[in-house]
Image 1 (tube, rainbow, N blue to C red):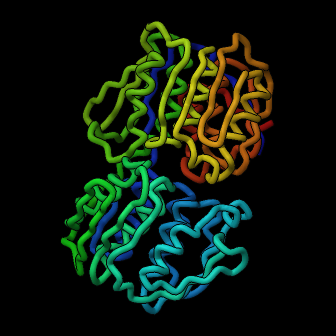
Image 2: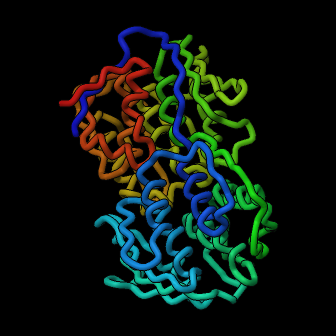
Image 3: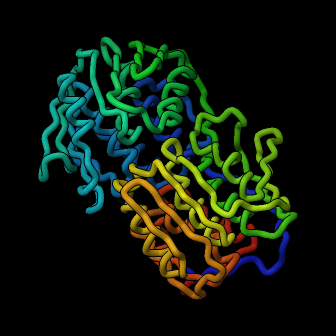
Length: 409
């Protein structure tokens, strides 16, 4: 599906949007619910990834195709490895067979797990025979995707001796680790995170609990970008959000304040307001704790005609696509002066944007959504626009509510 986008004809904008539940929180809670069925979940994400996670957790024996869902691949690997009596083959899209899983498999094997590679060593598909994992101590490199770490932490309370996890090196993506530990705490599981050591105690059962999934801050980022690119006076209200969020991407509020977007918390909503201010010539950010924001921020800066230097992006190389190379290619098509390394992106300010460019999305939901607000500055096309269903199926409809004109091309 190819879409043609143009921005709202009238500004400033004023509207309200209900954003789907966080994919990150939903998938964590779904795994915990599989371990402890007396946990209830409200405001669950309606994303493809959450649906794939649900379907995978319902299988006792067979093939689980997680498509492009990296979170589901990591979480289900740990889940099936720890489930005595279950046997599964985890596979996915072509891109998924190129995304490494070795670090997690090695850690689980060191705990006694039975996992075999079906094709290429270190990569899916993998065949898992569930076992009782009694070894408590395990090590992981600290600078890897936090999903590997969270996968182990989520199964930890169901293990006979819990887990004592030592992270080797400098820890990155700390907010996502804290999100996992925060959710464990909400169901009554004891844990500690001191220095490079995380300990999670075993819990045979937990109390009946009803948990509400906060809406997705990553999804909110596209509306922050929209407000940043709009005229002063624009207001967009988003729900449901907490001031003390477990999600690392809630740093959005702080980041976009530098781009003229003020965040006001009212009840369970946030109101984004475009205010008049002097923009920085170059926005400098270290994003190792919130790498999923890089695409949105880079496009916002390009649309505002300012530069940016974004670092801490080493995990973007192994996402749905190589996101740094994808950003380089697509922003260059629009006339950007951009350079990337394996862990950083630098954008030099330019004064014009090429019109009617078709943005390729590389099976990556965030490429489609990050570039969409740029329609406020120029007419553009988005190829394979249906990819947004991975995390935010209602995205295009919600963008129409804001006033964008969106048509099949």
